[in-house]
Amino acid sequence: MDVPLFPLRTVLFPGGPLPLRIFESRYIDLISQCMKNESPFGVVLIREGTETGLATTYDVGTLANITDWYQGSDGLLGVTAVGGQRFRLLSGRQQASGLNIGEIEVIPPEPPMALPDEYASLRKILEGVLDDLGRLYESLERRSDDAVWVTYRLLEVLPIELEQKQQFLESSDTMARLKLIDELLNTVRGSAKGY
Image 1 (tube, rainbow, N blue to C red):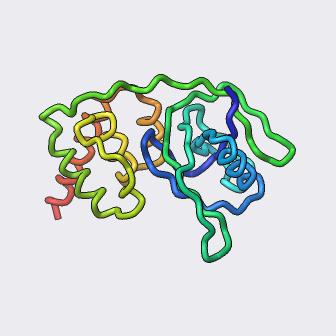
Image 2 (spheres, rainbow, N blue to C red; image 1 turned 135 degrees about the horizontal axis):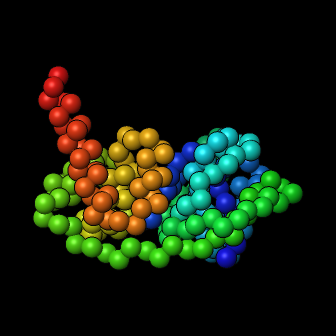
């Protein structure tokens, strides 16, 4: 399967929101094509390079489906997309316009998993954070009993390095993600008590 790629300095998780401001013609074309065909584009984290120039990317990314668009007061195209399935990039090529096209294989989604009781505090933390984040998360379907969904939402908002977020995106082990997120939050709580 071939999809247009959008290399970014962000990690998109399945089910997560992605606000974009589009100003490069290659990406205006990408958005137009995806909206016309109701097809997704691929979001991949930049390993080296920039969003507006040459870049190498990681091999695992997330398909993004456009849910809304608008013209900003500055005249730029604004788009909101939502993460779909994860994928593995098999090969890539660049069109004359500069748009990157990737041949991908879709990674099977993790089945929903009941949030274990020992991690119930993560649900409470997440619900409080999402309520504070406002518009971007208002329209998202909340599945706070699903451990897969909870881990993805927490990873979006936690202030950790992009490379760490990428490692979590590449993992298909929900329990390992839960354990690491819980340890990370306990470390933060411990640091806060030390001051």
